[in-house]
Amino acid sequence: MSEFLKDKFNIDLSQPSTQKGLALVGAGAALAFGHPDLLTASVTDTGIQYGGIVGTVVPVLIGLFETVRDEFK
Image 1: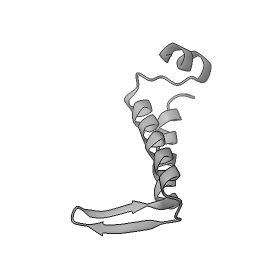
Image 2: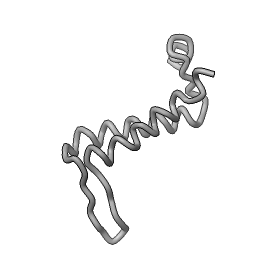
Image 3: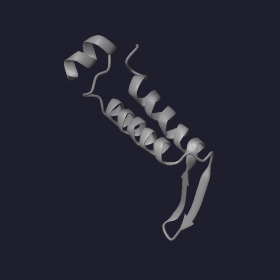
Image 4: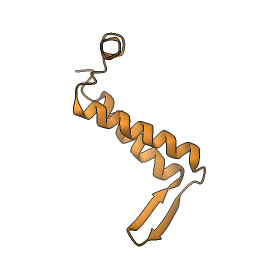
């Protein structure tokens, strides 16, 4: 699978930034399906937690950037 992604899409899964990027994209997709609000914020004992579409798009964009930033050099 790793060789297929590397040959066809130039995605090298051995790079830590690619792994981190894919994890962020996956987390963002999971949040997007669970929180359809535009922006949500809740204050808990552990701090402020953001969610909603805006709170989800930022990690997804960071994840996409981390995934592909070194692939097209």
